[in-house]
Image (cartoon, rainbow, N blue to C red; front, side, top):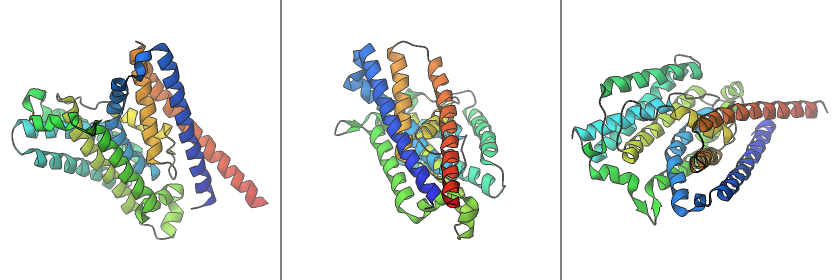
Length: 330
């Protein structure tokens, strides 16, 4: 790891500490204004509400680390949720096969994004902005103006979201396990470390023999796979699914990732930080609801934190590079 990479990693850790402090302040203020906030049921609802966002954010983190971005995550989750629900509604397959089909569909959609970016050489922000609309349009085509309701779905499928282990909801456990696996891969495996190298300095990564294009493709495919898993769980959690499912989810996911200290310019950040970002935004959402404030403020906050986080990343990276240049002259 280069000096710049180490400095950016330290800065990301400080950002994560800042999120913890901000989260504590939100909890303190909200508790003083609405004591019901700290009830166990409410805290469980917060974690449930962010669990799906956190799963998708884990995949988005992998992509952002490579100096790319996937704007189509919401459309992928929505399409997978409807297709999975429709397969079960039509009794076309059993539950295990439907879950597998949903995950494979997500993998294929993410792989297509990766091919457009790596083989087609289309900038990721342009490519995934296009597939965001293509996948959503495909969702509308498949749905045909219909929806899948909870009455159409087997209890075994709906029971996934409502089941618990040791009193902890399965969705929260799934998000935690996925985050732990992704964190392990990124930090403790050779391909994971290579993703950081690609984001830190793409030309240097190519020079030392890192297969950048293949790993970028794999990052998009992994993001799609996690979107597939989230789509399957989305249908289980909400029951009723239509072509608008997960609409706008990409904004929440990207906000969670960048506010969590994952550098939008690639090369630094952690899945743990992205999880913290998701929890912070989910806590703010819950606080606004308890305080009976307009949901407009949540959307405004999501947009504001993206701007602030990107600005902070640019400032931090600039400061690190200037400091290293000064050290080099000495």
